[in-house]
Picture 1 (cartoon, one colour):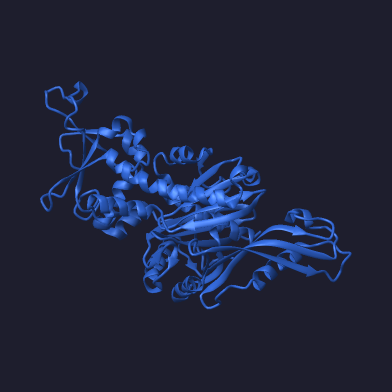
Picture 2 (cartoon, one colour):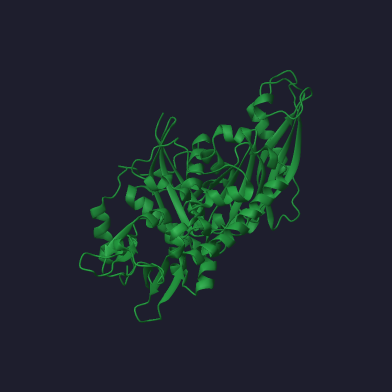
Length: 483
């Protein structure tokens, strides 16, 4: 089969992500994944199309420049918040009563249920999608889709979950794409597409709840017998935790976010000896230096995480499937990388919990970032687009080529390259102050903390990756304690 190239764009609260994949037969290779800081988006919905266009254009331009292509269309995510779950039914009288029921008839029945469901206000609401729950024939009730296909019956009826969303948010997506001169190939309700790339077939069949923790929205999708049975979302996520740190400690937005990424832990009791550590923020004379105990930081994070998780557990209970989740809970999304998030959910719920990365059904040798928690939404849409036989999304493909590090460095220059590597314009780590991690001043000296010449060592964190687990394990010995 001829190669085709698929593009997925994830309009998130904190980031606009783009993923480009090469598809041939059943083989999927991710050839580009990139993220840009989102603008004009709140709770996963496009609030300001003009601002959202800026980050959208940066993401698309970056992919086009790196790969030497022109993106002519893309699949995109529908908002996860302001979504209502309703029930609907549909029935068709078959003209050829002795013929077998086909997949086309089942699809038509889904469309009938979706089209005939009455929304309260057509001007402000619209139907996002319909998901079949069960089907009925003249001889069989509450059957699965794979059971009724091929049966003979004069009628076919179905029960569906219909998801109603905000019309303005839907139209704003079209406006952003139109202004960027990129066509919308299809809009996906990502709670289902993400589940298909994160959950195993066994988990979905035996019962599982998928908690997707984004920057602005956290949602839960309950699956049983391979079908999405219940969905709900709340307008809280990773940004809410950063906002709490900012408010409680009087930090800037960027400092609060980076401290959360570098030192965040949602279970203070799991810190052990780390609870005595203190983060010291030095503003180099601009402001008095501040100290933030790691335990206090963890307590701030724990309070918000508990609120989010308990809301999700409430929705699981409301679904009616709480006692049928044989595979417990899977947590995914960009905010699911918080240290000890699994243990916190397990302690609060009693379920077995795992962190859900994308299943190994694609290759990404040159795009390792596409295997991150933040990329699961994009990858899910790529795999759905492959199944739906979306036509090639790009044109003018002379050579699919990635830029070398030398080329990137030459184009960005010293200042931009430094910022891309995690530094800041003035040479500090977090942009508005150096951060020094010191031991509690009352702690007793240790021989290991003293050099041969008798001077005391300053133990500081080496920022290798923006994950607390790496930072907690890596020390360096330096006379200067300011990063």
